[in-house]
Length: 273
Length: 291
Image: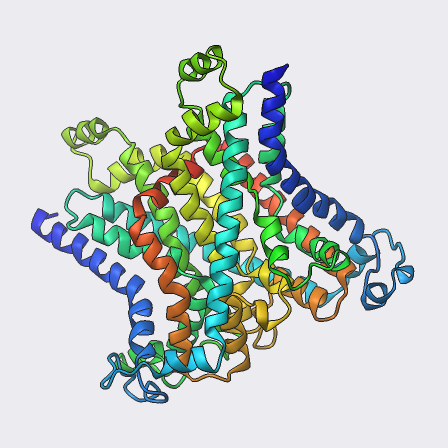
């Protein structure tokens, strides 16, 4: 094929693909600024002729969106911090500390990945019901405090740390905790950043477990609040789009800011080792 | 042994969490699926009875469950190849030396992956609404009659599949792109000198080199797509005429609307077994093909 034609074709296809990928998101943003009821017209408008913030204001004043936003931030933040701590400790131990049965135990953990999370959800709900934890922040955070994939990611990265460095510190009489905090943690910074953003995004977007666990609107996260509005058909198109923007923009912004870390994690997690 | 005690202390919190909040519930699920746990047992545990394989036996005779399994397979069988083709196509385009602004295109094509499924499913519901939706507007410009995308039992699942492809293809695209970048460039060089066409290069160099990556990506996508839930929950509520009721949607309804937790866990287990069987078969078939 003529190289100029090939170039035009390839870039044209990329442009078309990007348009398809971005159109729903841009349309959502545009409609969220349209006055109530004006998006339901023919032809469907692409741009708000008179942009307003009413939809957002109403969501916060009437639909309790501020509460959902707070809940989402609290739950995703808590899950990220705690699981980061636990996964990094465990991943490092699997990579660098010697103990009987290490390989075997790790293989058992990887085996857990085969079981879909939903299998555990019904008994977990019953456990929490008898423990009085249904409809609580704690009930959403607890099962998210460690993940096999997170441990795996840290282990993959930590295996590359130089053993001599750790041995030298041990000969100097440093405790394992001291070595971890002073030497290992700073070296693990890249994988910690990667895991932090992966975990936060997953927790923010999570739907099924919070839906089961959080039975009252007071604890709803943004996806739960949005889904319940969508199923009740109480809000107009423009407000639903404003709600979607509020749900999507925080994670999209976080992704754009830390894109490299996110994609590194995605690739690290997909390599078998 | 001092070192090994430290190791166990480091492992303890994560292992405890996984044991108590995952392993234990999974084992509990197996036990629960052998009981008739329902609303009465929820009120008073003394009403709980052991029914052995009764729930599983009942599921085998329940058309609703077979229908849900069928809808889930429909979603997987149509959705996974479409997603993979979109991912591979996008990765090939991005990998081409002729492509411009690669960083921008990569980010744009990947953006749907990080968005919240519930939120973008809401957006798609309006884009595919019969009267004011853009999908029908564009069809109208081509002179095609409007389609009742989410209200017609024949179209609801294809619409959800389209949404899933849009939402997910970027993930595998990134993995496949990394796979393409790992193929040695001199292989293509040699092929070009031999006068091999672009298609033959793709067929005889790219595809074999990508093989293991494609298989891994396919298996991950299959097990992900079997877990269809949020999309029908938001876009169709399992309808119309239950045409988008997946196994997990049925499990959620049986478990948390009707409180038949025994039946619901049996459904979860059957889904797990099906997923396991399908992914194991994929692995075995690919090994046979490679041998």
